[in-house]
Image (cartoon, rainbow, N blue to C red; front, top):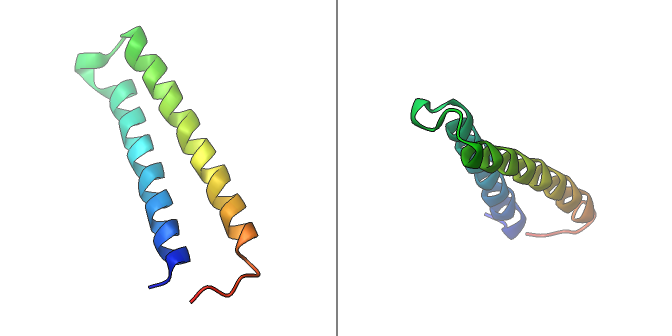
Length: 68
């Protein structure tokens, strides 16, 4: 397993965790309507978009590299 592949898996896991947390902030009945949880959910979605951008940047940057 290459370092590039492991990096991709970790970034994908971070995106997934961020989106799961955002879902919790927006849709959990015990946190519904709380401004703090709404802001945390928005921040989590923003972090997920930033991680997607980073993953695209990483893949473009390492496209020409030959990494075992």
